[in-house]
Every structure is written in C-alpha cells, then in structure tokens.
Amino acid sequence: MRQTLASRRPLDSEITQDYHRELIAGVEGECVLEVMQSQQVWLCELACSLSTEQVDRVHPPYTWTVRQVFEHCANAERVFGYRMLRFAAGDTTDLSTWDENHYADVRFGLGSFGHLVTELGMLRDANMLLLRRIIPAAWDHGGTVAGKALTVRAIAWISAGHLRHHLRIIAARTGM
Image (cartoon, rainbow, N blue to C red):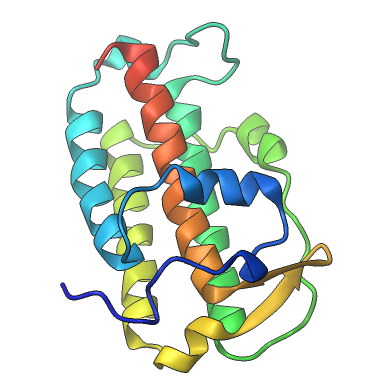
C-alpha cells in the first residue's frame, strides 16, 4: 500500500490535546492505513496466544481484565469511526466525549472472547474502508469533540495510537 498525502501524520495544528499527541508519537510509520493494517496482524497474534485464565483475570496494578480492555478497544474503535464519518462529511457539530469507564463497568461481556476479537477486527476493517473511500480533501476536514479540535487524519492516527497503547499493555501484562 502506497502512502498518500492524505494518510500522512497529522500536523501539530490538527490536534489540541497532549494525550492525543502522545498516542500518535508512539506509532511508527508514515501512512496510517499501513499502520492500521499491520495492527490487525498484531491483534490476531496476541489474542490467539492468550489463555482463558489470562483473558478473565485482573492483572494488577490494572483494574480491568484483558477481556474488558478488548471491549474498551472495540468501543473506542466504534467511537473513532463515528467521529471520522461525521467530520469527513463536513459535520461540524461539537461531539461529546464518552465515558469509557462507564462502558467497561457495564461489561457487555456476552459471547466468546474470539467473537470480541473478531468484532474489534471488523470495526478496524470498517474504519479502514471508510478512510480509503473518502476523498483526499476529507482527511483535512475537522470538527470538535468537547470543544477540542481534531481532523479526520488526527482521529485515524489517534485510533492507531490507542490500539497500540492497549495491545502493548496486554502483551506486557500477560508476558507475550
């Protein structure tokens, strides 16, 4: 996959929160679509190497199980996709934040861990398909989340950084 100008790293002006800058800074590569695709492989390899005991146990000092972290990543991927769709379409309505802790506390938790991993992978696939079908100029479209400005490009890179962050923690927690 060849890098395009649209999928390049975001400019500093496209991001207003330091936490988002940190997530993006941890991601290697220059094309977010290539990064997102490679993370699919990492996701599958990591998930396949986890035992049931590892998935449903809290690994101190953390308070979520690995299953909850995967649920969180699936929820986040869905939220990132919605935001990218809205901004790419030129919708500048200020979007609200979401309380990831509330979603984790609810613990949807139905079904197998494999289905959860599949859902996360499919959400990532859907977001990559969205990014591949929008016109290059739409990557520059922006909006606000809780008053903080972001572009479609920045959200794509934040999504990659967010998943990287959590997969690294899971790998460290489980000794993978």
